[in-house]
Amino acid sequence: MTVLLWTFRAKVAKKLRKTWTLSQRGESPAFLAHSRLVHGCSTRTDDAGGVVYYANYLRFLERGRTEWLRALGVDQSQLMEEVGLAFAVRSLAVEYLKPARLDDLLDVVVEVESLGRAQVFFAQRIERNGELLVTASVRVACLDLKRNRAAAIPDNLLARFKEMT
Image 1 (spheres, one colour):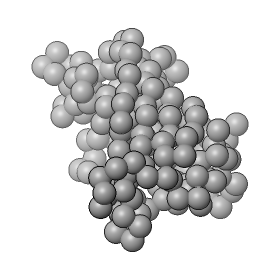
Image 2 (image 1 turned 180 degrees about the horizontal axis):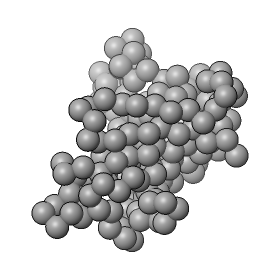
Image 3 (image 1 turned 45 degrees about the vertical axis):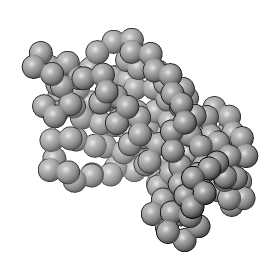
Image 4 (image 1 turned 90 degrees about the horizontal axis):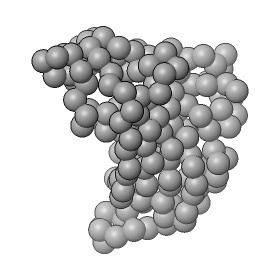
């Protein structure tokens, strides 16, 4: 399976360095059914003992989903401004299996587990060199920002998401 790989080192002053494992960016979106974000742990993410603070894993998971959407061509700012919709986490369940430590490079894996008309269920995991550290089930809802209520995912996005399941 072809995997989209982002390399992210938190120590680099807020700059994102992207490395593509694909020969072309314009390949079929089916490759995004399973994507990875590699995240480096810095002193901003760990405690005095060098262990990553538990809440920071939520940030890593969020960044993975955000980059997944971006790679699909979803401009979230444009979606909010022009369509009045946004995606928000409705619920999540996280299992912390092993700790990450300072200077670890972590793989954040994003997979679409299932899809509803107004929500997406993601299965995510965080790994270090293939070793499973964290698993998460994340339910993301599409929201109408004016009514502050759930809304149907636009058909063009829903079709892209269905390709990922």
